[in-house]
Length: 224
Image (cartoon, rainbow, N blue to C red; front, side, top):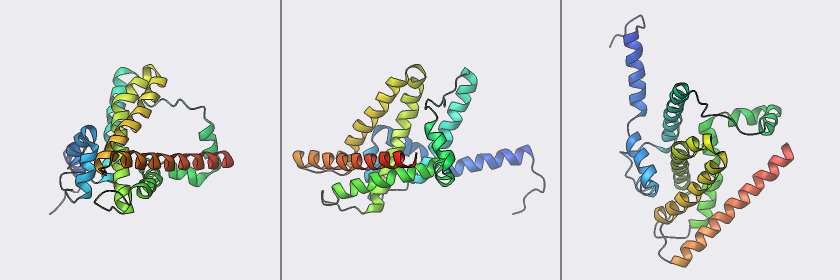
């Protein structure tokens, strides 16, 4: 098939539409699923029912693209900066000294994947001997990235707009989203029949995550 030698507005617009079309398949089914019942998306995807869903990394890219477009247009229309940075600049100053770390953290997709790794390993250690289905580490990474996408949806739809009015309330909402949606997803995506064992595994999972946080805090204090 021959392509025109010159790029026109028609061919440019067609190319943009085709690029979006390649990203879009499965987006809405995954978006709605991760908003209403993220545990169903995780369970079905891990059990092989993947045709109607966007793969986890693709979903990260889709959310980044669409929410960036949404809040860029809304920001211009309302004359509001939805991406205002509230930190004191200490973290940015630290990144200036470590170029490799700066390059890694500048990629939203890489950051999502790196955050998912310790959480996935905590989930693997806590739940590997529980339930009727045994999952491997890659499957727990998949679940963790999907959960990160679910948190991103709630944060962008709830916490980010509220953060313009009251940043403290927005932070409480973010914490509540992680605890409530995360706990429900663990209980339903990796079900355990025993009530007490279910909560014991949850406490074990949370303890391991707290250990990771403490490790990262210590490393941050060392390299700062």
